Length: 323
Image 1: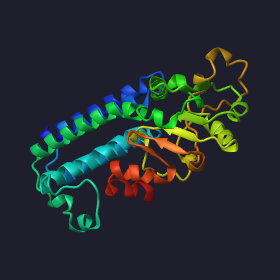
Image 2: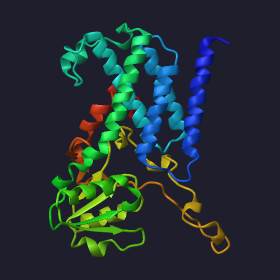
Image 3: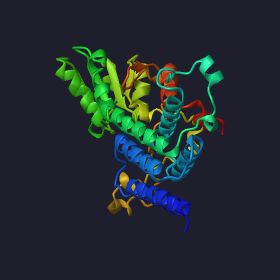
């Protein structure tokens, strides 16, 4: 068997192990855990993969992203991490080629016009692998500090005597840390955490801020009620949760979970004629959101593409929204 065949087998083995770990969990787990698992898989692909230049490495990672997206179409975090790694690899290659003095992470007209293509960048596979692994490790560090940077902004959005209503507090470590940071800064506020069966509208008439986590169902009703009562809605979202993929029709994505998660098996007889729907996501229109609180700053929905431009390369995402 040739060394290239052994390399392909190793990558396939790492991919199967990664997907098996995701599917073996009784519940979804946090987005941070999925992002770290995805990043670890990317590191293994970079280390064990066979490539001679940047172009071959980019194509290898793009192929892995397509396979992972086909296996887990509702886990956008996985695709986001791979696309972010692709941009970092492009930047590391450009930095090594141009030198740190001439490299700039931001695009300009002159840079786009004079930039060499990937095939023109002569960087050895060993140096490329070392640079790519270093970039991935730096990205992992940025993920680890993301929650702390989000929580550091709590004092900018929660004032003393505010009444804040939130949903899914028990399922979001980021939200709990966000409110703890506000209390640590001596912000005296009332926090109302509602469950799935609570009537939200009766509380929102006296609420100052609505805070929610990104991955939560039944948040749409709260956002609609907040809009009705002119209450701002803030979403705490790490950068790896902001996807560049545009979904014109959400029904194209299999977004239904198992009915067993909400109805026990021993109730099967009494509900044999019922159609049980367990949605995994809520589609919340951008006009219902006031601010996204990311690790760098708070941005309005109309400025999300600035954050997308910081973490995704145009060459890697143009075909996603064109298809």
